[in-house]
Image (cartoon, rainbow, N blue to C red; front, side, top):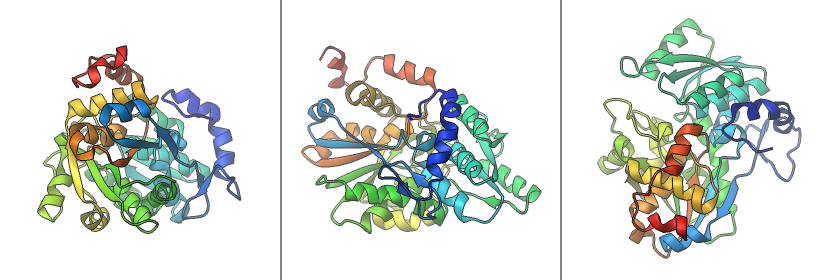
Length: 350
């Protein structure tokens, strides 16, 4: 029961997914969310010997592309939807949290409205709608997502405003992934995790540190939206002036959340800024050398390793692939373009 970028696949498996998610007792292949009302798929662990040889480091990929709705966001959204008593939820999302929340709400007979930029990937817009969510578009050049959410909150005062990242329930849901990684039988000395608003990274820090000591956790952020890196350097939350138009659409955030920052300021050793070229190269290499389909945001961790190869040489790394919901045309263009990396450019003939 594999989720991919064809929206119709979601519909074909929806009823089976409902049954799995609502199991009274999790099977050996499933894990409970903190709310103890839904279960999630365990993350997918991928070893990639060809990439290890290319990079000169021991690297294991942990992919959430096979999670319900195709990204880690179901961990957070499921925890929110099953914990709050409200019958309607409102959120803002580029797509992954939106479709995860729409699906989670459908499982517990709730409704949700998702504010999405009008530049969102069509595959994600369709997925939100197919899972039962109501999409409200916003032109982020003239009005922020948060401003539109505030307007809807006035219209629907009984609704719960669900942040995609700045919410303790979101962090708690994502911490389940950190505990899974900590329990893996690998001698990791480092974990590299994508950062947008900080929901995944803060949850991962929380889950890993409560389960295992001695693992350095490093963030990976688009260079075009480097507010988190600037925040870590300054010791306080820094904001982007506008929503950054990076190809990593899941990281198009104005700033870290307050709840996330409280954890990340102490839990991250560093945040690496990743160029657009390195993000694109990481998507290609994950597909060509590891058979992993990643969306650009999901490839940020590998992009960070590509950006600083000597720093990671001979280490034992876990690289987080946060999701695989990428527009088919965008993905095809990335895979078919020529490599910008002189070392990786020969992989087609290797």
